[in-house]
Image 1 (cartoon, rainbow, N blue to C red):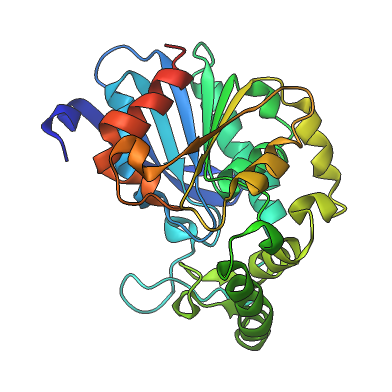
Image 2 (image 1 turned 180 degrees about the horizontal axis):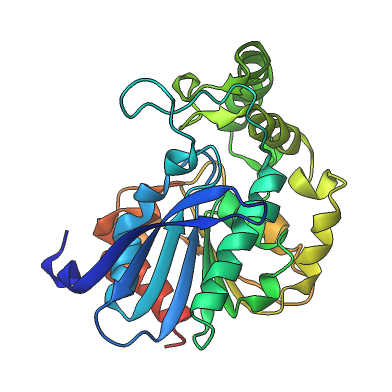
Length: 298
């Protein structure tokens, strides 16, 4: 890590979801004045540690930053009663993607808003983290939202041949495994282990022409309530969050005019960025700086 980031306080914390479930988080604080509050919301099956470098960078720039794990993921997964530092099985664990939004993301926004009520609150959403912005009832508390590789992830808008691989894997491998094992195992290729309900809802959305917009979730009404500034980044070499998929998601925010930017790897001197590459530290002086300056209004 860059020596310039040594002046950041890092605190491991826990805070309650709206139903009281304990969520693990990490708070990154500048040693100097706090000028902005920033909440980083993870992609599906991605633990918060992936965002540690970017969160430290933002804290160095005067932001109070929170990263956290959704229930069933990373340190928000209950420990086993036996064995050293082993996670409890996800068999029988009740959670869905809509639960992550309604119970976990909602609580994280409230926690940051209450703790830093005098600061403007910015929202960083990676993949599912950006989708959740439209589902939460308190998205009116957010002044600026930067979506990173966040999309309406229907398989139809992915690039070929990746879209056929994704559809086949989720429906013909992932779903049978989730039913047989009681959860979706990370070793099958999804990242971290996922609760059964999360994976099944995710598959339903991916298989639908308009992703979550084809569901009957009452929370979809919250998309229209967001009135902050919104910038969405899509990357030309990302096979999942293609520009049409990003535009389908941002089109759900009907009260505003979201800004969608396409970045080619060559624009920032990189060989590739893809779905996860934004958070690599090599982009500190390019992509990270651009998002930081935007959320700080510079």
